[in-house]
Length: 352
Image 1 (spheres, rainbow, N blue to C red):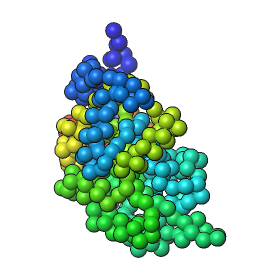
Image 2 (image 1 turned 180 degrees about the horizontal axis):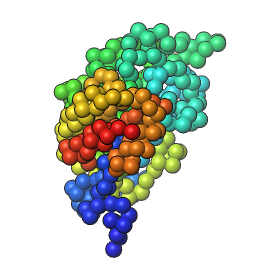
Image 3 (image 1 turned 90 degrees about the horizontal axis):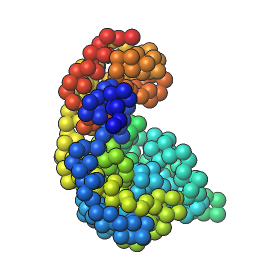
């Protein structure tokens, strides 16, 4: 038997620390573990894993798309979308602090051979006119802009939501300029729950969308890329090319099915706790909390170096990430309850 306590975990296989580094640290639910044990399996590379097929049908239906493909990560989903939509040498547009630009290790250039042009924003939300201004017409001297990628919610901006009305405006621009439109919707269900709108309020305007199952939805691994049937046919080719073909991946897809059927609405609890935490920390000396969190991500600016805060909080069993020399990121998720929020507040109140 594994000695979970000796490994630094509690008796019920949950971490002792309050882990606010990311919503990717969530543990699969008991319902997920049971679904994994019972999932019928095949070989997904050969196209006959029934549980993967069920997840893909469910995902496509949820976002109003024709088809879907299960991929190991949101990064792979984004990069497949870029490779399908754009040709080598084309330009694509992303927001200045987009995940595609900051955290996907240059993959658009390395894999799809595209040129990235970035767009300024207000807390992650791009004004439509800035997109028009940054788009390039193809000429003897310039690459044409082929694709617009929008991240919603926006990670580096602190989980902010780009309103669905903006997506309608983005769609009009893309149609006018014959551009494709991809949504990096890693946390799009957070946006939908927080805004009180169906996810299709955003996805109905795009050509493709990737969303993560392994963040606030608690699945251990995986994302889904959705789009038209011809787009997904090409996406499957790129998934294989990138080494993303998995075999009995129904074990993982089973968790995604549980996530989509039972864990979307509860994201509101994470948003509420993020606001409660922000309210408590904004009055403490040496900390600055700007706008209230819109979803589950809280950014805190610190007078002292953020790395110092990370070390001090770790000594008090609170895990956080430095998101800059003087900025902390705290992410709320299913494994953080009200007691954990109280412990976090107390740890900050003790100061450095």
